[in-house]
Length: 584
Image: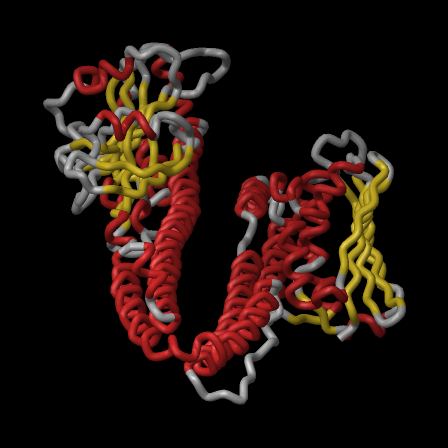
């Protein structure tokens, strides 16, 4: 074979080598591109699904946490306490009176958390429930829940979806089994409360962030049994022991799995923090994910066929006319490899190599357009995220404020109640700012003053504050809204958290060399040098809250490199955060 090859003419050898090299290069490039694209798509899909899955887990955990908090709040109520006193005295004479007292608590529990379907309280002096829910008289509580009650060392116990046999509706529910809180150091044996949640509502929470119908989310027990039964189940995997053992190896992760039918699945999983026996699992068929790449295989085939024909036609000119332009094109590709996308191919020839060069130029143009589109898209995405963070109201702040208003109202402190309601209303109005991101310094100062007044009412004798604007002309300066409130919030929540003496917050605003300086100083516990570095980089701040990373992102988005945020701290003496922004 070698001897026959050497006897061929140079033209034939060039044609053979050219065709062979063309087919080989295109095959390697095509197959490699296909495999790379498939691996990249699979990795991106797993990463994206893991992010969405983690958000779904956070949402589910937040709902479960709210249900637990609401349930224990009911137990801390006066009506529940009265019932527990009768249980302690084994006094069943007031049963109907206690049943009537608990109706309001049961109704309030449903109003606070719409996911709750029914509530059932089992005690030695009788069972209590909402009279609107029609309990099942023939059902004995201990017969249905006896196996769970015998488990040692539990206070809260989550049960997966099942038919509610305590009530006549027989609806599908998830249940939270609770032991009552200890009152006056007294335990209450044989007293349990069952809070039932609607399975359909919980399923809606589970499926609300699905990307498409190719992805399915499941909430499972660690043994693979269903916690929430899906409406349509494409993948029957919970009976396969190999699958269940994979997501028992950690709290979160992803893996590829081939089921009993031979189908390869991409699996993401994450354990709920509220109940570590529950795992949220996301499943997608790898074949469905890579379906669009099938066209690439046909494209590679047609490119190979076309290039073979072109190789036969151009092989005669390869030794002379083709080598020069190809070398030039190669040099341009090397420059592109080093991220120089401004180079362009130019040639006096109008042959196939020139056509490739012009296509190369069009490809560079398209790449630059795509890069710009990606940058624009990322900027818009970050702006949307910032607006979403701006729109968020700290639930703890809102809860504390409303709770303080309630108790002051109960204590007859009408003046404080009026002041807090007006301050809260003004705080929301200034924060919303008619949907605009830009406000004036005067409105910004009013906004943070209302926030500080509300926090002083919520945390009495915790801190004092002063606000100093050195030049009244600065009050009309236009600026990005809600810059001061995250800084004072950080001082109150973190600076004064472990401080015994009275805290002090000083806000000083002045103009310097075309910049507006916003300086917030407190005498809180402060941060050491390592914490300051982490705060600047976002790592420590993200663990403690979103205030500083959000503020830094918003400054970067709106002002670019013109704005800055600086920190200095002497623990228990003075911690200062200085924000510098250009005057618009």
